[in-house]
Length: 241
Image (cartoon, rainbow, N blue to C red; front, side, top):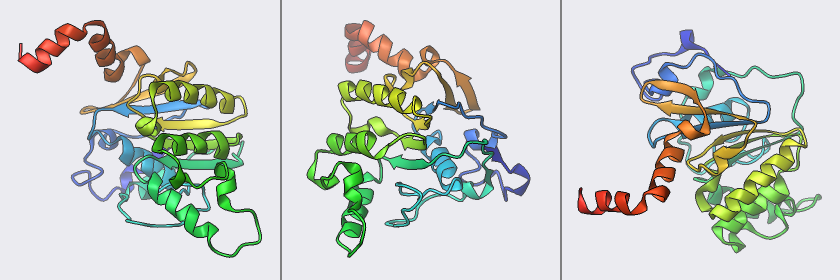
């Protein structure tokens, strides 16, 4: 993915003023799994959303066929991104957004209430309305049923409703789909989800974007420190020591 810097109207306004965007020239994606990580406010979701929209996905999520719009809030960054596609074209694709997953579930229910000749859309998600499950169950239903392989899957914070056990199960599902010629681009805060071994991790910082290993991410370092020194860190947090 290349940023058409010469066409950007101004790097002094949002979202181009974000350090991750202002310093961006080209972003290479791993053929299996690419992670985009960083602290809140660094532009992870903004960048991932722009990548997805530049590739033809609906800003609120879903497949390339979804066109519903609840609240158009996506930035104009996608207009200045140029995808560089490989020779192999994916047969499947999905943009998963934890933030707007409720809207996606509602859109599926509404479309299935309309007369149609084919099978209901919800059959591709396990056959049960996503609103009739817990948040985590509905997330996992999409991962298990809708993601079929030979696809490009872009996911923004998929761990939002998943327990640590489910996050590990999702890692196994990612591996299964990678074995079926799939590619993932994932924005996440979860050190568990970041742990896929054959992958790239880009960390967004106040200085821009840098490639890191799992053990170098703030998420891993802080979680490890807390678990290994829980009492000390709790004293520092709660007593101000």
